[in-house]
Amino acid sequence: MPEMSGLDLIDLLGERHFGLRRIAEELWNERGELAISNSEWFLMARIGKGGPTIAEVSRQVDITRQATHKLIRKMSDKGLVEVSDDERNKKVKRVRLTALGHSCYEHNEKLKAELEARIAEAIGADRVAALKEILAMDWRLENRES
Image (cartoon, rainbow, N blue to C red; front, top):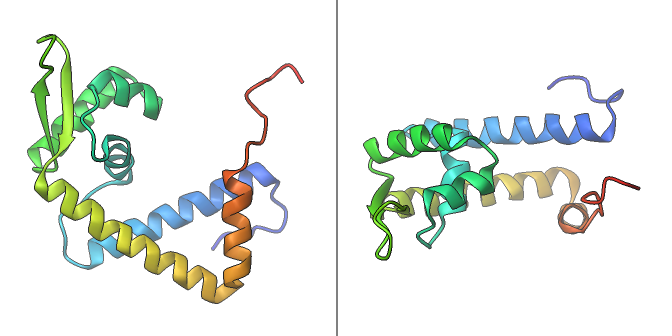
């Protein structure tokens, strides 16, 4: 664990996020499952139970369409997602999780819940609840004029 005492809020959030994502990925990979990167998990969360277009997914994750296509192709090769033509416009491609993708996603949600329980054990359930509430609040940062 890197020294955190001198970090500002943004760097503290970044360090914790990076560390938690690394631990979550390690937990997944230790259990002998299919190797899935953090980027792939991030996309799977955005795809969810629906069937968004690849362009919609790309906008949600704030990466280039080319990078999104490459990642989706890699996920398709692993059997996690399937890409199909939109019913109304054959130029538009939709992506959805396969049965394997759903299964992996659900299993990973359980692993993250275990990790959250470990955090609650370390810092207290009330602090975890307060932290989640604070992180979910509108911090009013969209208006950059202020």
